[in-house]
Length: 158
Image 1 (tube, rainbow, N blue to C red):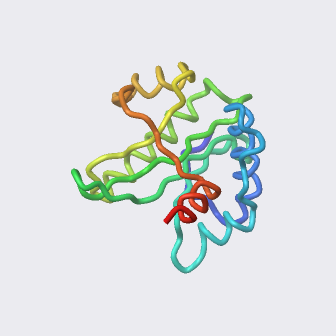
Image 2 (cartoon, rainbow, N blue to C red; image 1 turned 90 degrees about the horizontal axis):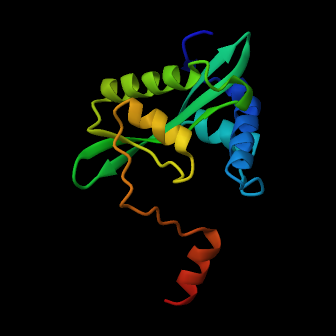
Image 3 (cartoon, helix red, strand yellow; image 1 turned 180 degrees about the horizontal axis):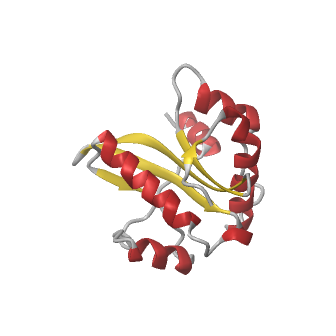
């Protein structure tokens, strides 16, 4: 297993496969709307919207960590970890730790005040993993989403 590296545009088909695998694991298999082209354009255009780190075993990407900058009114610059995904067949081999290490080092290089992410309340293995790394899982906060349909409905009420 190699140290994680920055993803390249040609990695996006495998990155999308891992995103779909996560969606299936989270019982949301039909929720993935992005395409390989979206990932290529959004991650490798003139103004990339995200950074992706990948981890390989025997030349196959088996884990990813996708991050992007955010701004906190309390803290200033922060880094958001959108997803840390390890293929099901490779969990428990240290890939998640290597990817999280890479994200934390990257955040420190950027000088961010916080790295934040979400975890499903039923995903105890992930919660245990994050807490073992020193993360503070905020169980008293709820994630709020306004999806595309919700945005349109909201705007029709104005």
